[in-house]
Image 1 (cartoon, rainbow, N blue to C red):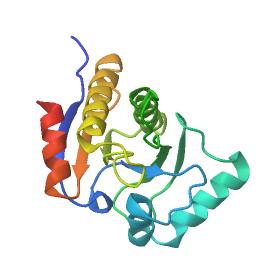
Image 2 (image 1 turned 135 degrees about the vertical axis):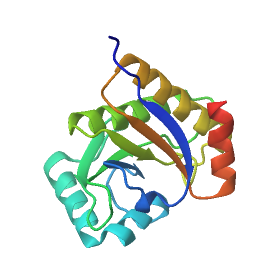
Image 3 (image 1 turned 120 degrees about the vertical axis):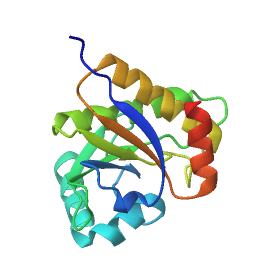
Length: 175
């Protein structure tokens, strides 16, 4: 019997309210959660999210691109937050490779904690300036490849869009 490959689905909703084992945070190198998705996670999870992030930075230093940090999710339904640093978009740089590394790190960290479900936003498509359609395509492709290469590890990846535009971009990337 072959191992099953996890599913990917697009969800319109609030990342902080996802009943998934892990939610992914599009973080900065210092895990200073002052804006965007990161700030929403702290508001929903409570001060413990920033406190655990500060502890992680104190013990490990800045979070490098292509790596992941894991903290608790505080008051949110998820058990963990996996923090990754997506690329700040710049023309002439291999942005797709950097975003692929961030998404792969998030999925590997999800597997490392034994989680079976993960909810992921459009990493880098906000304040980091990555064009939405390109970012969602890279994220969806990376998730598909990761699940194919690691069957039976993660049951479900949710690509979560807070607004209709992001949901439409994820839907297009999945088709």
